[in-house]
Length: 597
Ligand SMILES: Cc1cc2nc3c(=O)[nH]c(=O)nc-3n(C[C@H](O)[C@H](O)[C@H](O)COP(=O)(O)OP(=O)(O)OC[C@H]3O[C@@H](n4cnc5c(N)ncnc54)[C@H](O)[C@@H]3O)c2cc1C
Image (cartoon, rainbow, N blue to C red; front, side, top):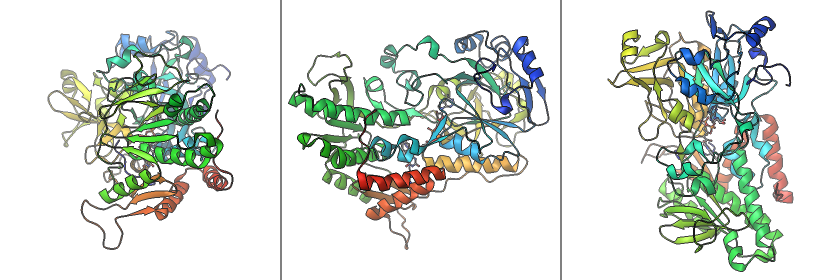
């Protein structure tokens, strides 16, 4: 994972939209027309905004759009009679923001409501303050302390709970699927999303989705589009990982980790549990010794040693935490001396650091049992490494890196048409002519191997054709983990994504006519918690050049104090800043929350 900073209605809404927010609510005349009979997509262009009636895109948009084939639209649609009305009653340009994470949420809050009408479209209705996610798994914080709802009475931002499934650049619309009643949107996907094209093993076991979970599909027009849909966990196609490991990206994941940890302790003390199974159930494996895996190991270690061991005195000496990585060190983005300090400190605290280990598989059942074994949460799993063979574990959390989700990987791929009036050929060659557009096969420009959207220095999405021409889509932007600026990719961190969102909001608020300096990342430092009230802080410096006045980094208690104050000040709302501070204080007085739900 590339990361640096650790501080760092009911009602008559048309199908697919649910209760409508003010700027999406059609005027009654329009609504009546839309809901009753209109079966074509009519667009009334105003100078800046588009007053658009988008109806039955199956019967209209799909047939007119060269981007998405009829078949693809059909596969997106659940009710072919779906009628969608999205009308902007405002004359402000509509900025459609995909994603409610570090990029999407912060951009939506920073766009000027007097210039734009922002709409966030995201499968989840909240923002997660990820740097404190490990604290929720370790019982130090409640899940509600680190989330901010997208719908907020003080923010002039609309929201649709849906996942973007496709973009039609030629008609400037996003095709979405509602996710309001979909289960598992707070957790990392176990099936489709992270499956690489070659990961056919996992494809076989993809769970079937109940028909009621399939959301209505509809289209939303945009004047400007911002893509910030993040990434999914990368499993490198390791057998059994997608189905059996726990991931760690969202509050649903943290809840699962905490629940499973508590479950394993309760299973271990059952009189029917054999000593051997007890040992396996209380062995917790974390794969990936980057910042997420290391901080999770540290938080769980604190939780087990300071809180759970007082509740289960009979289990003394049995629980074990192992941190696996193929790299020869933990926290490899830190200076060597700091990462060595982290390894030594964590080993002393009892974390089994297994660097230079290659995980080869994960399955349910005890070591030595004949595979295939069925999932049975009453028992352990078996983790296989090249170096040690099979070991029994109560849970395995997978935190090894980022992969593009299916929307970026598949939906943003080939492009058959795009609006020439808002596209520019790269290197000052002007607008592309229709002939060039039609003559060539175009696709979205992506970073080789990683697959992230390769944006220009103004964070604009680019298309390229087979002859090497590149066009910049002036109204489509991408930021955060799913994007890479060509002029130097910042690390995939909240710190970098926040800076991109702030930069883009400033640029858009200023207006397109004003020239803007390219985005450039400013490294504010790197923090990581390593357990027992110790942390590391890497002070930014050029490779091999340290400041005369600043130390290379901080470690131990001092760094931990910086870690605490940095995250407290960076928490978004005052309500959560106060709740987090108060909860940390309560933990000192009464211990962490050990409940299981
Ligand atoms: C446990 C953990 C701890 C971390 N700690 C730190 C730290 O201490 N410091 C630091 O700098 N960085 C940290 N990071 C990294 C940081 O969280 C990411 O770099 C950052 O979240 C990236 O922001 P983003 O907006 O690109 O993606 P995200 O924040 O992941 O948001 C993506 C959003 O897109 C939505 N989405 C997904 N698919 C679709 C779709 N098809 N249509 C519409 N919306 C969609 C998702 O629901 C989500 O709301 C941490 C990450 C994790 C997982």
